Length: 257
Image (cartoon, rainbow, N blue to C red; front, side, top):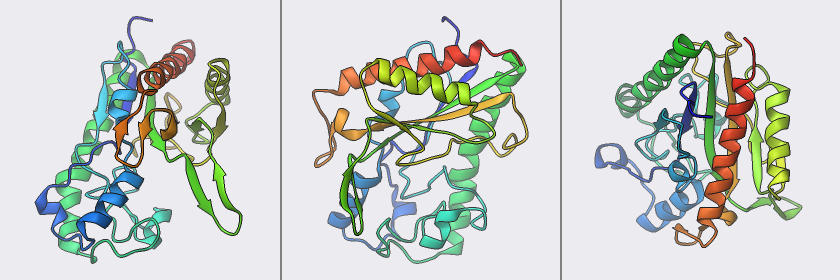
């Protein structure tokens, strides 16, 4: 496959950049904030999903502790907003106060970060539809290897997670990716530990020409989570991620719209 211009690779959570103008409201100590960054950042995903032949990438510029571009713009639509984790986090994943609510800051983040990111993503999808008549959004993520679950303790997560959307992820695309993961010798689950796949709101649940799938890689395969550095398995895992990207693109290319 030589031309994957119909694929938009979206990487929302790889950055650790928190500029002062957005981070000054954070009240966590530097040590606690660093622990949250290690826990919540999809470190190196911009490299894991950088397969050659995929020219269109939309990568979030700032850390999700500035703005989580995967959240709905309207907190009334966002299930995580009630926990203080809408597009501008006020609480950590475990409920610790991260920053005070600040309407003025939220508006600045919408204007300067969230909206420009989504305009870029929407334009990329529009361009693919205009040129190819179809578009595949590959949403690239990672996840921690273990998760606490009360009262059951700790359970081990799969090597890969395929996230789907009921409208934008056909069963055939999901199944092709799961089969490919297993062929490569890894374990896979669907929408576990996380589910869904991003689609720009202009097309969300409206346009079947836009396919979307989330690929999530278990961090134990490629990094040391304690210090957020690459492990010896990084390059091999990167090759697997590239193979999954090609699998998704080949399946989508074969579809007649």
